[in-house]
Length: 261
Length: 359
Image (cartoon, rainbow over all chains, first blue to last red):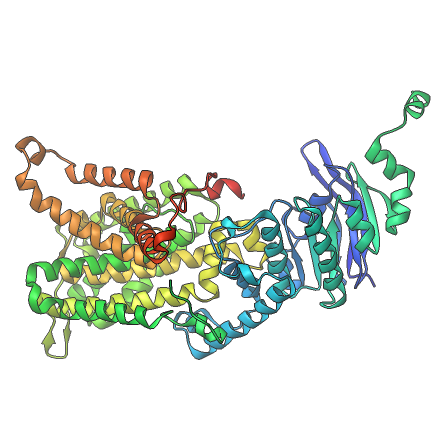
């Protein structure tokens, strides 16, 4: 059974059909990429999965459970974490505080014991910190622990956002253009991390990606989008050679255009 | 510069990072405990008032500074706390020690209700809504004389422990001081554990907070309730301090007063709330006393105090948006790195308001 199952999902913004009967299956343990030109509806799909948008039609199922109309804060509790294309970090907080928030929904103490800082709350803080440090080690963020987000370079900020998503202990992580704005070296690091996320942390990854090098290097399967609909799916190689995908990215050749006119 | 080698995660949870910090705060607390012995009733009374405002400013800072929900109606919570204590002790004859916690709880419950519209309103609209709430409370106080004494107000006596009455300014000062210390510790605890982090997260990015599994509605109403609880307790301490409360004590000016405190002191900081409360309380006293030295046309000018507050807010927002505490941190940093200080270390980042960034 697929981990995440999207069935005939449709979403409209005014007159724009952002998603049109999109179906998608993400298997447990794979790295799945969504590709497509700008405005193809990839981020809209992410927002529908994470509950920020309500689709008009279709359903999203996670581990067999229908999550289509769940509130946004319920989605991570079920095991889906995500990052954002334009970063949604808590800019005035330190890296550590940002990542510590990933442990919020795992807290077991009540407000009362936290407000009085009872031993229970203290113990939990130490445990959360331990978990956070594991992720910090995993992504090599040690030098930035106590720095404010606003003063860090973009590449590090992206990394912090990834760390925050991983600290949620998800089963599936949605990465929205993880390599955008990174230099070649950083995106190479990203490839290694994605492989480690899959192999070591055993988290399934669904990512939106424009960098075909990253896609062919780390992804097991690819779904290509154009104008809100799926145009091709398969292994990275198959999809890259698919005529519809080439047309979506490069446009039609002139003879074709002339012939069809 | 000081460096500390930390050997366990628990060390990061300590109240004081360095021994020297503990010594300094200890010294301040000791100073405050000895203060009434030499200061005389006048200054003791004023510092008690500042202490009451410290609690209220902490409460407002939790809501406005940390959670980013603007409230222009916090005088209403102060009034609810004050009238709860006044009604229970003067009219019903209950013990103050029972009435004070109930003042906080009562205020928190009403805060919970006021928090509901906050789920849909943001920024200036929320400010207007909370201001409307304050006007409603003001009217209720006027129109419900059976409970509030209406325009005549209520006389509130100082509490007593057994047969020992806290009638003297010094004894009441100690009560307020202890409550302030408790609330400072409470605030500190909230912000070093998950609930405080959730509040800040909601302020900085609502979308990101939700994707961290933080329920927005619950956290926002919680912020209102906590904030109202603090302010209610402050009100409960305020009533016996000034002995007599009437609707005049809780006007819109009082709400603005609280806002000024957190802006001048420093938003989203515990130190800032305390600095702001002390600064503004002493300033209003200074204006009252200093007015005699001013020319006659200024002395008779209505709203002179409001104008001075307005000027102070403008100057702070223009030159030091981080407030007194922000300035303090900068000076401290300057000394820590002494010869290496660079002029643009604190240059402000150009950006839009957070609230405009994430919707």
